[in-house]
Image (cartoon, rainbow, N blue to C red):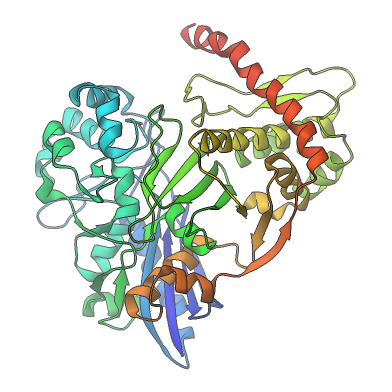
Length: 496
C-alpha cells in the first residue's frame, strides 16, 4: 500500500493527515498554537510553533502506515504571511500574518512607486493590499531596517516548513501569487516589481509548479517526524489552491464556496482573468499552466458567530437553524449587511460596518438569525456577480467549511446562488489537496486531474429552487442598494 501525507499550516493550528492513494483517511492529528497581537491591527506568530506542530502531528500519524510506506508529502498553508531568515537560517522576527493590517500606507507607496495601480495589477494581477506579502516586507524595510538588511531568505509559512523538512528554499506558484512579487501570467518572479521595491531576488525561494518535487526528507527531519529519509515533498499550494484540488475544482466551470470565519468564492480558469478594479484576486492554480480567481467576504461565519455569542447565547447553532427555517424567505423584510470587519469583494471598503435594516417590533431572534444567514449569502453572491461581469461561467459549485455543516444554510446558498451545490465526503479539503499534490510528485498520479478522479468524492448534491432564487434576487437588489445608500455615512463615521 502506498500512503500520502497532507500537511496544512493554518492560522490557528497545523493539521497532518495520512491518506491512502484513493483518498481514504487513515489517521489525522492537529496541534494548536497562539496568535500574538502586540498592537491593534497587528497579527504575528512564531514559525517555530508551526514546526513544533508539524513534528508533533507527524509523529502521531506516521506509525499508522503499517502495511505499506509513505511515498509523498504535500504542503498547504495560510497564505501571504511573511517569514524572514538570516544567513544562519534563524528566524529574524515573528512572522507577520495575512490578517495583519499595519502596512496600508506602504501599499499605497508601492502602487505609487510602480507608476500607478494599473501597472502593478498588470504584472501581479492584483492591487496592493495589506494582506499580501510585499506590503509587509516594505513595512519591515521602512520600520525595521536592520531586520530587512539582515534577511537572507524570504519565505511563506508552508515553505518554512518545507525548509525544515528538506533543507530547500522553495515555493510554488499558487502561494507565490499572493506575495505580489510574481508575474502571475508568466508564472515567474517579476524583476520589475522587485527592482522597483528594492527586493533582492536572490533572497526569494526557487519557484516550482504545485505538483513538482521540491525536495526530499532529510535524515534529521526523518528522526524528528517519523517520515522516511528521501521521501519526496511536493510544491503543494496556498490553502485555497490546495482546497480547490481537494474539492475537484481543477477545470473551467468548476468552483467552490467555503464559509469559515471569512468566506471565499473560488473558480478555476484556464487563462489569467484579471479584474483591474481589484475586486477579486487572480492567482496561479495548483494545476500546471492554469489559474484561479477568488472573491472574499471578511465576516461570513464570523457574522453568525457574533450573533450567537451576543444575541443568542442560549441557543446552539442547530437550534438557530431550526428557528430560522421557520421564518419566511426575506426574514419579513429584514436585511443584514455583514461588514463587521470592513469588506473586500466587491466594495473594497475598510470603513464599512454591519447593519440591520428594516428592524421592527415584529422581528424576533429567529428573524435576525435568518437575516444574518441571508446577508452572508448575498455577500458571497456578489462575488459571483463579479465573475459574471468578467465572463467566468460556472456549471457546478462545491460547498465546504463550517457553513456546509448546516443543511438549512446549504439549501439557502443553493437557492440564492441559483446553481447546483454539492458537499464533499471529506470536509478537510486542504490536506487532501496537498496529499494529492504529494502523490503527483511521487508518481502515484500522472497529474493533478488523475489524482482528483481517484481521491476526491462528492457526498450529496442539491439543486436550486428557481422560484426561491427569483425572490432572493429581489432582496439582493435591495441589499446592494442599501450599501450604496450608507457608503458615505461610513466614511463620516470613521472620521469622527
